[in-house]
Image (cartoon, rainbow, N blue to C red; front, side, top):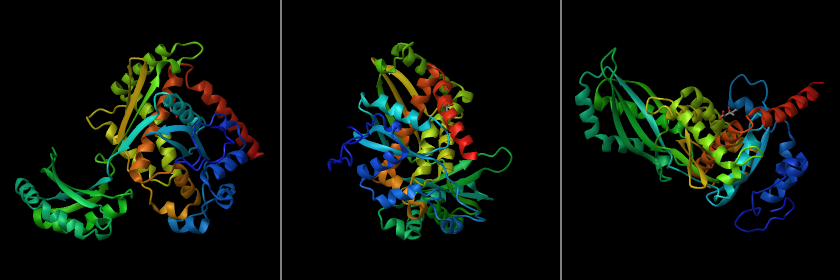
Length: 408
Ligand code: MEV
């Protein structure tokens, strides 16, 4: 599609996301395209002109001791084909080259059919820690025997979730051996939170359910809080890149692919590299999380805990070659929401959600996984060829010059 192509009115709102040259347009021309492509009113787009799109009076009620509103760049990553659907990805990030890198990798993935991604139902874990349980074996047996009844109590405590077909699903009992004290019990309540991230609903539930659990198990409830290791709520993405597409002027595609596989193995074996590998993945995921009003700290915490689930911290993605393709895949917990507070009060979050076109929280999580994998691919391509600094520093120099100009 060309940048001037009018909306087709077909299944996609704008006929495609492959937009070569989008980065060369002026800010005004990009906004004009946004207006046309997504049928967004001029007044809504004009909100982006406002250096403080979130009104300070609203901000003042969101957190404490407010003195202002903090702004960050909002960009669009183009070229993404995810599950056969064209997607334009809003990203909020301060680091130069993150958006460009995502666009580049999205383009690399298109010839192989784009990204394939999915996400599990939104099953969150609420934890109830029990301390001072005298008969741990007996408590486990009683909790297991009465788990159906406890789940029914949990459902009765969450009517507004259950009425939407979500709500508590199951109860799990975990025994934790503590070398310094008596074994501890932790009860997990698994709750389908639908399109919500779920922290509030789960935290309220475990606080209200705890006395019922104490009654069955004995002992006292200590912590009652959601777990950010949302490992029942995983998102996955896969991409296939034709090895020939990876060739640079000085390196054949086969060598680039081999080197990416070697880099992937390093991230699997070495936590020092894995941390940086995963940081590159989170560059993409966090940027989408912030643009869409999601709790990126929760997503970060879940991702890193999942990366060390077998006792050693590893890369969240893997790359391998299969015949003439480089194939990458990623899996991580992604507690994404399409209905958080910011979706009601923040104009650019609302706009971002419209642009990304998420049908629900699972769809958004799947898209985030694909963007994380794309960010990872772009970083690896740069690292194993020219090195990261060449492209990054050119964009960084541009940002630094702009900052200097603005401070004059
Ligand atoms: C920089 O923000 C991210 C990278 O360090 C990721 C990586 O090394 O894979 C380039």
